[in-house]
Length: 591
Image 1 (cartoon, one colour):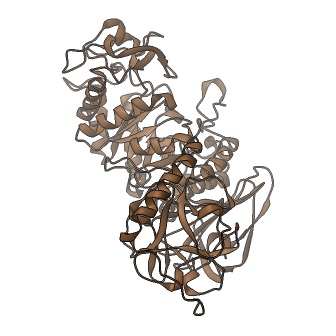
Image 2 (image 1 turned 135 degrees about the vertical axis):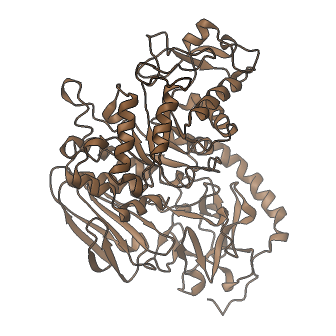
């Protein structure tokens, strides 16, 4: 606190409208210039599913191009009998090759232009479609069922000019001549969603899936040119009235993260995890350490964009079949740890009917699964060659720290300044893989790790303590003027003096001082919105992400906490949210 210099309290909310309008107008030009920079999601898919990362299994990694009803049924049964279902794994997903593919002219279609089920591999039962028969079996095991599609419409539907169910329109009236990605069958063309009947076509396909009992749809081959397909499928699945998870694949553009989050529950951030390096067409080995290594940077880069309802997806977990995974035992723990720190879906690609006992123990480790299911994306706080460290703070104030040896060939001592994880002083920690206490930790913590190994730690609750947030642009601290607790007080920077009104605690995604929360004024999501102190109310404009690059982003807006005017305008300079631009006035050091 500063008792010597009386100052005017922050402007009440009711008196700041004019100032805010000016700021918003001023922000317009800068925002336009920065429009191509990636922005975090303004909102997440609102279909009521995917509030935590999905747990399950997919056919692609192991089964590849040979899915059958018997194979899928057996995998579902194994998920249940192995205890994986009881541990939380619930989705059993058929990937590609469930439909008829007669050649490059595209998937065979039914009377309404939708893909026709391969009845040789998925036989009907009376009048019930073969895919629905498998879904019934999966549901009988207490699990959920998923299926695979790609954007567009089959050339077969266009050639046959199939009618669109429930309308007077036909396939050729909605199709374009541009090709769409279908990696294994081909023969898909685009849909012009401005044409009458286009949305109705996707609606009819979604209705069919819902009638079969589908709980999860993966759209593969999605690129920036397929936003119309993503929007159409999102709307179509919601209009069925059945809760259906929507996942996008693969290698999606980070610059469109807000779009993927608005219309889906998850998106693949990169290419396939599989190494495709088996001999004689074998699925084994499923992957290799190099493919896992490629995700370290992705977990860091995509950290601001995932959250409840819409998650970054780093592809399948290749743990379950021992040496056939293509990873050493330490590397398997590292893959699970990295995915869990990134709050990624954990979709197994392994053969569940032939599980390695050690791997099964890894997959059922409830402490590690809890790190994934907290739905919090970790920040990378050490990126020093083979030393990689990520951390995240839990709602109870405990901190999870993952220390990785990136090298797959030699041992490495990995070190971290625990203050960078928000831990000041000392605290106790538990190794989540061994379940053993590592005792008291504080200051700089180091551990020697073998090739590709990880140590995953969780501190005792409350380890994340109050810190000062210092702007390197000026060396001044984020400050609540005169320790004012009037709701709506504009926050600013001031010379650091270690008072309580400059001490901030990161708790449950909020930044708090004096028992109140840092808040984007009036739910604002535009550049120039002032940041104030307000009664904690659980709203998303009071949720913040502490990023590994030193920035702090608003969960609701995706904008960066910013010192107005470049950050060196003296004591009392207001703090606002602004388009993230890498400026030093958007960097914050925790001291």
